[in-house]
Length: 147
Image (cartoon, rainbow, N blue to C red; front, side, top):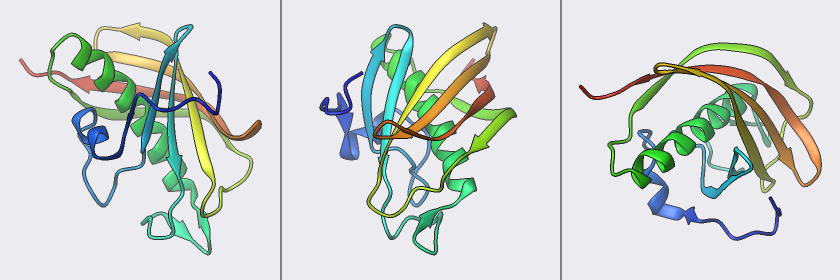
């Protein structure tokens, strides 16, 4: 994905693809899915509830990763005219946070599905700003689909 690419979804439209609401919306752009990987973004704002001392804290990075996964699922569900499900973090594995992003930095997060079994997915994630990797690891997500 080109980091200069315009998002497919941004602004208020993001809310149509994720279950989260203010003040905890941690994605502001969706760039699409390419070669099995989805790409989402967040520009770190000063008024973000996870910003401390001018940086997005660790909890904010993890929440951004989780919502990047939710955005991918929401995008795929909306394409099929299905409701957007609520997801839950089942586990974090090998999460490495190299650098905390600062106010104004634009994050682009890559999500690759490693394995899917029923309503459980294991994903590999990489959070970057430009070419610099800020965080990476794996997340297990459980979906609660409407019956």
